[in-house]
Image 1 (cartoon, rainbow, N blue to C red):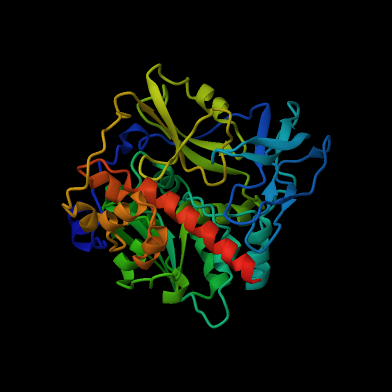
Image 2 (cartoon, rainbow, N blue to C red):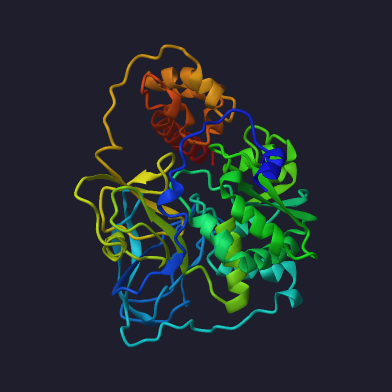
Length: 451
């Protein structure tokens, strides 16, 4: 089987090959984390406008109940992960480093914590527009990390056509095994989710892209794939950032998404496999997005695990359930080591977009001295977007941000490949993130001034 995969596998140009470090959790089945006493639900845990609260202080809520509605087209609904009482609506610490308005729910210890209205949904009798509205009100976002509202992605603009639907199961980020375990344990939900999404989009075919370091998942999906489902499982070379949607499209269809454009411009819509499985679960049980699988991993945690965690669970509770941190922990990341976000507090909650929590020790987090660029061009060879990180880095260092626009800085996907290969230890991707944020602010001010 593995020899066959070697002949079949597809990939993109450039990229890097870091060790995957998935041995910590790849063999561990998904386990449900017990309910805790308190849940913190930020109203801003997705791309776009924060959700608008629908509940009041002291109000009793039920597991799966809508507690905040989308405040704009690019926004997401929010649901109660447990039955309990609204304890507070106030600013709380957010994994992004800010204080964000949040709904705090105190769990009812005597409740069985069943869904407020559990039942299968006859999705085949519903129109694409009705299915799309259910996904909008279900609060679904991309579970790969970006947390972009799913209904926005499925609302194909007039004049566009989503000929193909891609299920992104590459999971190229080191340490993370969330998607891998979902494929092994929840493939019926994946297939149901694909059926629903194909009906919404009107797509002719789906592809499931899986890196070949998960050969058993590829084999299982192919064996279990329903014969009437127009879907193909595609083996991909294990290479970072194979899970970036533009790289996935290039690998499978050999189509390049033009600069400044989206996958729909090449007739493709892409979603993370966890999102697809969660949509399948919604139509099996009428369950909105109230929980997700999170990989808790790294050399700094006592008991690594793949946990099914209610949204809003505080990191302190996750750490306690996993046996606590080791004494030499130096950094905690939400996500993986390449694109993850370092945390300054352990009181932050698990969000919809939290794919993993990584605990690194003093042996992995070693300060490195930065040296001048030697123009070796390793970063150019690594960049999957064909940019010149060396030039962009020099422009960023002297704050020539407008000049960076001319060299397509906004096409940077912030994968960190350039920083990874740089022999001078230049924090290229960190500088690019700052530059892009400042440029977005400037463009927003200019747009507002013209309005």
